[in-house]
Image 1 (cartoon, rainbow, N blue to C red):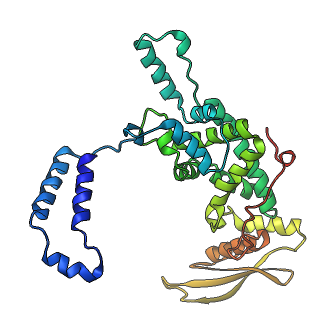
Image 2 (image 1 turned 30 degrees about the horizontal axis):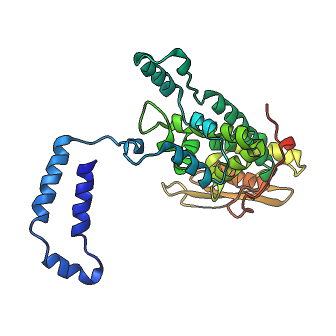
Image 3 (image 1 turned 180 degrees about the vertical axis):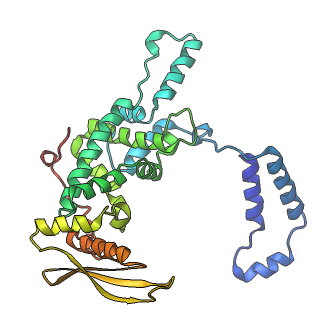
Length: 321
C-alpha cells in the first residue's frame, strides 16, 4: 500500500499544473523522475498484484464513529448495537468465538450475534413493500410482470450495488475482503431489519423506497420484463378489456428474399391500431408489434409518467407475511 502511495505521489509531482504550462513543464522534466518510476514499477511487478486492504487496518480507524456516521449519512436513527450486529456475518462471528476460546476467555464472554435473524426480517420487509409499491406504481401491469420487476429489485446484484454505494462495504465484519455480492445483499437486508427494530417498520419502508425502488429511475422496463409469447398475452388482455380480437396486418416490406429483408407489421383491434413493429421476417415483426401494443396497454413506454418516489404506503396497506 505504501509503495502504491509512493508511485501516486511521484506521478502527482510530475503532472503539469495546467495546459498553459504543459510544454514548459515537459522541457524542465526532472531527470530523477524517469528512473524512479522505472524502479517503482519494477518493485510492483516483482511483488505481484497486491490484494486490497480493508480500511479497518488503518491506524486512524474508529469503528464506533464509522457506525454513528453511517446512520447520520442516511438520516436514520439506528441503535448502534443492532447496527453492528447487522454488519456481522455468521462466519466472522464463529471465527471470533473460536479465537476467544483459544485465548482462554470465559464461555460467558463468547456470545457474539450475527445478522442472520435481522436479514430474514429485512427480506420480508423489502419484499412486501416492493410488491405493494409496484401495485400502486404500475397498476396496469399484470402480476407476472410486477413479479419480474420485483425480482429484479430484490436480486443479489441490485442489492449489492445499493449496499456498496451506501458505504457499507468497509463496515462489514466478514472473513472475506472485499465482501462478495451475496454478503453485501444479506447485509443490506440486515440493515433494513435493524432499522425496523430501531425506528419502526414505517422508517424501514421509506428506506426501501428511497434506496431500492429508486433503482427503477430511468430504467427501460422492457429490459427487465419481456413478455413470453406476446401475441397470446395480447389476445388475453384484449379479451379482458373487451377490445376485440387482435389482428396483425402487414404495413410494408422491403428487401424481400435478401439478407436485408425488413417487414413492418401493425396490430389492430376493432380497427384501432394498438402497436407497430419491425423485423427481418413476419413472425419477428408480429411479435415486436405485439410487445409494442402490450407496452401501450400496460403504460410501460419510455414516455410514460415517471415513478413517484414520494409515494408513502401505510403499514396496513403492506402485507407482511
